[in-house]
Image 1 (cartoon, rainbow, N blue to C red):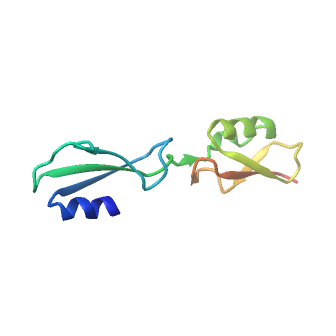
Image 2 (cartoon, one colour):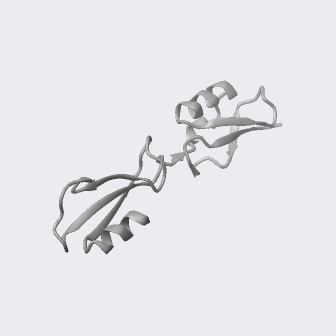
Length: 116
């Protein structure tokens, strides 16, 4: 990371902290402490907080047994999209692809699976 190299060249110790952010893209600096523009003594520590992007979403087991409409609404409320249905769309959900319990990035597509 370029900022870490710059701070290191100035003789500052860098303490990197990673955290999730719904608004700041992955690997972008969220903040520094002391803040940008403030003075820091040579040899002192600077904390750089870097975005890990959006927090992963776990595909919930609670959608199994629901109608396609109800399962779709639940996934949409979690920030996921439904990419389609494998099986009979008039039957209730029996699983997903990727599978129930899997962690995926917010905005990921999930296919609903029903029995034939």
